[in-house]
Image 1: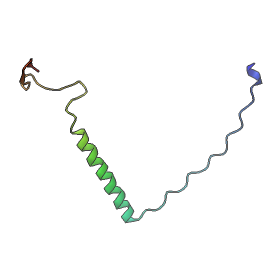
Image 2 (image 1 turned 90 degrees about the horizontal axis):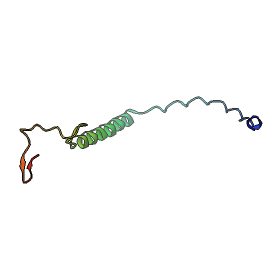
Image 3 (image 1 turned 60 degrees about the horizontal axis):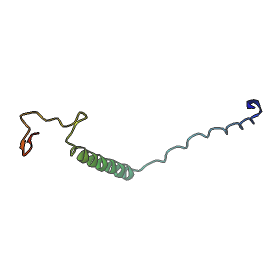
Length: 71
């Protein structure tokens, strides 16, 4: 019987978000340095991927001869 289900209690009031702490110039510089390092590592990893979304993007003249024929 669906009409006998107890009602859910009301939601508590929403608390306002606290103000972010003030950062010093040294802390801002450290955060920027960390973000730059992460970005450099990400670019380095991305450059090792040699295929595109459609597979290997190689022209026929770039294909090399192998023991089984042309790739």
